[in-house]
Length: 620
Image 1 (cartoon, rainbow, N blue to C red):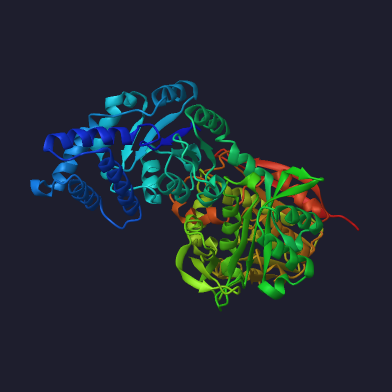
Image 2 (cartoon, rainbow, N blue to C red):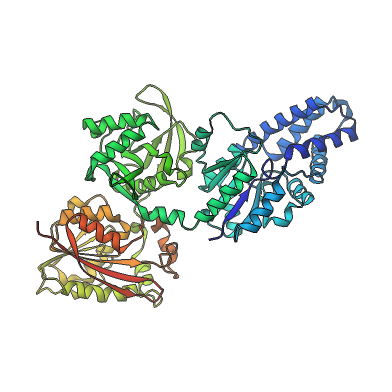
């Protein structure tokens, strides 16, 4: 991937205030207005306050233009001149457009970036008037090094709206992970990057940093900061070297765990104790865990941990991020469930790790809390949870007697419940996909290869392969699926297996305890949709002697569903899909006492492959 730099314009590359002051002097002299340094200072402050109101959607652009020059004319004692504030505004913008002023060193910096960071693209993203922005860019020669300029006026959208950034990325055909936003404004540039989940650099060339840079970086989820163009170049050079591998490496080294089923709880408690120095609320969480009162206080639910398997502390994975997902939080109400204690270690911030755990909770919420319509979060920070799709709904009293902001997100059902069997089977049987045909042959061998008389097929879908079940060999075969429509179709298609085939409508992510025992488990293209942890829980419940799995090996991690006319039917599967790796699957099975028997790869016509891995339970 090539690095894409999204630069704010004013006070980042161009000195807006210098151009602004020069244009006001010219206009004041032309119309006989009593201009002074004091009137300019007042204009600048008032103009800034109006732009903040525009960013919040309080006023329109026309309101801003009219108000600032109505006030300016009054400040310059020009009310009696009969000047039209909007006409003066238009002339002001045109005059500014002819008088662009670069920030010191900006042109040399942009030349250096363009010539030394391979394949980079430079785009301007600016709130303002088109003629003003583009005119000043052209008057300084900056335009020669830019790939395109996006201005809020012609887009009909403004920073920090997520839709502004979505439109920009759509226009240039870029992915978020290829982009980084560089700007000086917290409320426009940094808030916008946060809303759009794009990496960001807070550029402070005037050294006007607030007294609490760390707090602002956390509040706006800022990845980097820089005070000079030299510092900024080093940041962009470093970031450009990370894209394309940063998130891939992170994705492959992290494992999501449930604290209460994690074997080494002591290492987690030790790390939580160390992290409590970063956030005092962790001490309260620690007391709940150590005293055994977690569920008494918070109700049904758990503490989810994101562990970095590649970075070990005392031989144990590092705790990078965590949160609780429970019936109760600090709010006294009948609402449930709640996400709480959301925390990411300072060493891991900037990679949206908490978002991964929140996504896991949302994907499992429907099954865990079938009576609930929303998942709730209590927080005093507006803007923090909106980027994960939560909406602010008001304030409620906490158990501490304080008002706290309440956010909610609508629970979606498991996406597999919405995929029709016809779309699924038509897609899987296409000549360009060939998975239905290949899976049928593999399943035939799976039913033959093991000396058992009971089996359980997980994710049975429409029953492809069940025609190979021998009633002479098998006295009982369970077919498990989350989609009731699929099970009804299987019942009709395989009426000949009556008495042998038993169908179970079970969500394997949280209802494993409902599964009966069986000597063989067949799990084909299933583990990638429930994850290693849930699969381990299934195995522990069923206690099979043999386990035969088929996973899909993808050459393209972004496009893991093959292209087809039915592709739209699988749009939501991203919500539950986990990238599979053979070695990780083998390791996760070894953790619960299953040793690999064999491993075989079958290529598919679309560059992907199916890998069958068989296991046997080890004798204690």
